Length: 56
Ligand SMILES: [Zn+2]
Image (tube, rainbow, N blue to C red; front, side, top):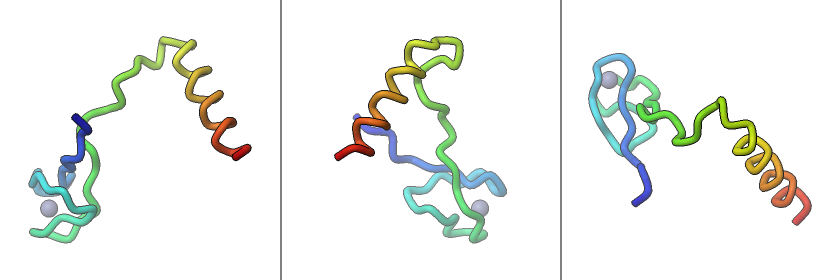
C-alpha cells in the first residue's frame, strides 16, 4: 500500500492534501523514505532508475 498521508508541520493535522485544511501550511509526508542513507547500493539503484527515466 502506498503511503499517501501527509502531516501539517504547524498544527500536526493529518491530511491527504498538500496544504493543511486548518491553517493553510504546506504539508509534509511525515515518514521518511524506507531506504537507509547508509545503504549506498540503494542510492546507486535510485540513481540508475533516475537516469533510465531521463533517457526515455
Ligand atoms: Zn495546519
